[in-house]
Image 1 (tube, helix red, strand yellow):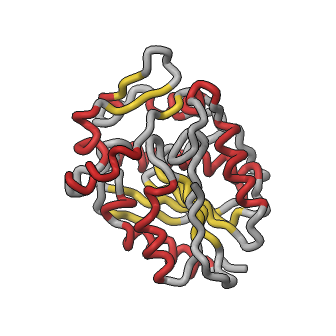
Image 2 (cartoon, helix red, strand yellow):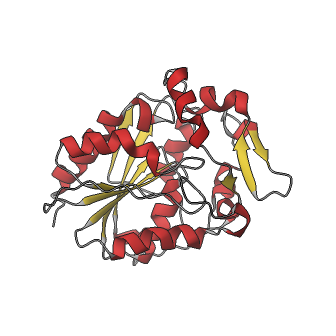
Image 3 (spheres, helix red, strand yellow):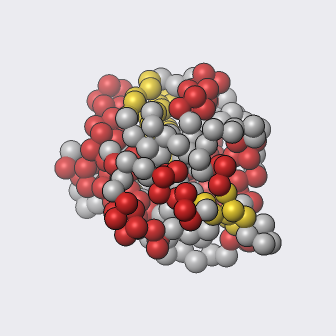
Amino acid sequence: MTTVSSMSNDKPVFLCIHSAWMGGWSWQYVTEALRAKGYDSLTPDLPGHGVDKTRAEVLRLSDYVQCITSIIDKTERPVILVGHSFGGIVASQVAEARPEKVQALVYLCAFMLPSGLSFMDAIEGVDDSLVLDNLRFSDDGSSVTIAEEFMHPAVAHDVPEENFLAVKPMLVAEPTQPLAESLVLTDRNFGQIKRFYIECTEDRAIPLRLQRQMCENLSVDHVYQLESSHAAVFSKPSDIAASLEDIVIRNAFGG
């Protein structure tokens, strides 16, 4: 499902790419906060997520990229890509494919990796993540979930448990093949786009030290900071919207 707000103006459109296990629905509160500030946003479901029922075993990173580029190709106004968690990898590859349409990349406690690396490469040796320590792969290896007892404390410990339980039925098993595929990025395309990072300092999925390491390895124009779990889209939506608006204002992004 793709959610689009109804405003029409010369401000850039925020195209928000959800994290693993979730769907476009996870951006609901951020979208509401952005709308209150006068910004349009798009929040698509990646294939195999949300209402899209594509089987995990057939999905590739290219399917995710095609999903997002097809939306960008129909969008007349400039786009700012916002990737949450694994969504950052998708955002990077989309920016490589459509550099002329993407004004900026924003990584929300996301994987911001250089060319040649995959999600699986990035997590190798990481031993202080409550999510990565409790992954459960399907018998055929085509998908992966988080052990049920660790879902809330690992991802959203600052979200009331009853609120988390309300969205838990919408979580899906994450296809594994895209997690193993390496990014292919160039200085000519991806490298020319401004990058911004929003740290989540209480993140138990992507530890803060890993977030900062990625910012050191691949420079960014500015770093924002939220005192939040990995699920900032639920616990800090207004703060995310404020950071996104600041990016637009500071850089005079627009039509």
